Image (cartoon, rainbow, N blue to C red; front, side, top):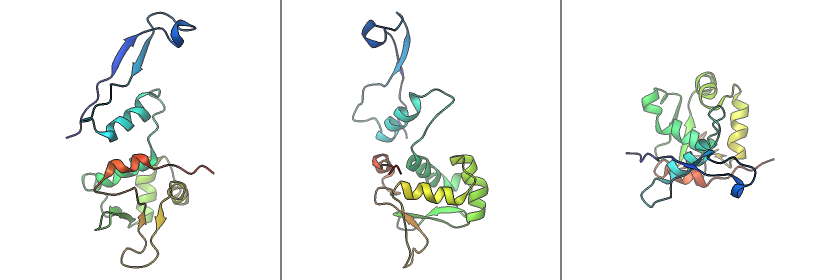
Length: 155
């Protein structure tokens, strides 16, 4: 069961009393506790501090969320984990491009998605029983919070 974070609201001047108005409300993160899920902490930091219009989510976290919920969303025939849980495979590119990409990544081109995978360090399996699968050593089904540590290689 995921742990929900409570947002703290404080009334304090910004910039140590300079340039901010008294009593201005700012959102702060709750203190980090051992029992708070790291995945939820990262989600708060990425989404909770932005304006409601522009919520950015870490690309690997979004992909992990999609793969975690494939059965519930009815897309297990389009994208799914490989049996070992160390890689995933896109089974049907056209339905993936038409349904998953626009709804979750705001993309309409599969080549752009592949480019994003490459920028985040994902590799394609070329040989063996999992040929065609996509993997990253920090993107594992059994340890979903590990993907928080992934870094994007800016070009």
